[in-house]
Length: 230
Image (cartoon, rainbow, N blue to C red; front, top):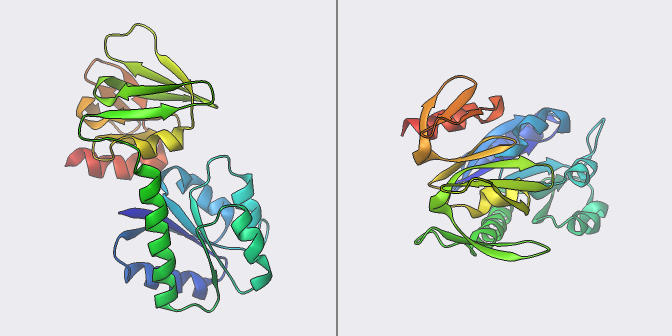
């Protein structure tokens, strides 16, 4: 299921997105937002966002350009002159208002294809994924991962049986996409954990089976509790 943010300052336009999302298989509305600022707390959980370009305070284009790790983007707008600029920021599609349900679902199909392509390189059968960084490539056995910690541009991958973490130049969001989705979950902007290593969960913390205590971010809490309770 693809989790999407709907962002538009016009209530009727936002409501139409909600209706279209409800009628489209394979996607789930994460949140409806009236501005870029309102959407920010949800970004870590979103696979994609449907965002209007012309909005007060910060335009949708400015918002996407400001993000180091933007979700996949479908722009929605009443102004066709933004189309070329939209594709320059690698948008999946560009919907010109008013658009039909059929046009919306075609854009979502492109979104699903793009997301599948991102995830195609990982092997979930044997737990091995390949990490390609600017300096090296390595194969990582995900079954040995205790947890992953973000440090700006770098990740610390804490492995079972190793005293020191493996440090790689890699984006947290990209790692979260490439790990087996049924086994790993992001619980904080700076932490990813294997669900089978979670021993206990409290309101603001997660304790692993080796006793490690990690923070549970507020915007990740509901999703974590749904997954953990299963």
